[in-house]
Length: 133
Image (cartoon, rainbow, N blue to C red; front, side):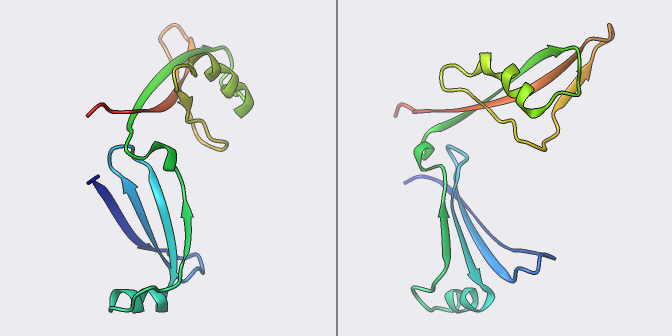
């Protein structure tokens, strides 16, 4: 049996009076089930009513049971005001053997400047591998 982590939460200050339940596969780190319930339906479920209606999303089923690996690559740049598309191009040479970048539009990226004044971005990557038993 695989190990899992379960999160039960409530949206706060959003006007969305709903409870969410998420299940994460420990080995892959994938949160693969996200269920939302109204407050009333959640109360009925935790007090014993079966088969309560909810809304569900599934994600990352292709990586369940696999091992997540992370790496970071540092890329020298002359200009730190790069667009998202430019960062994706910088990451492309490192996307081999199943590695994919974790760049997201609107995210802040690790920018460093060394003593010589040279600037670089640190780009995160992830991949999932099958673990031999």
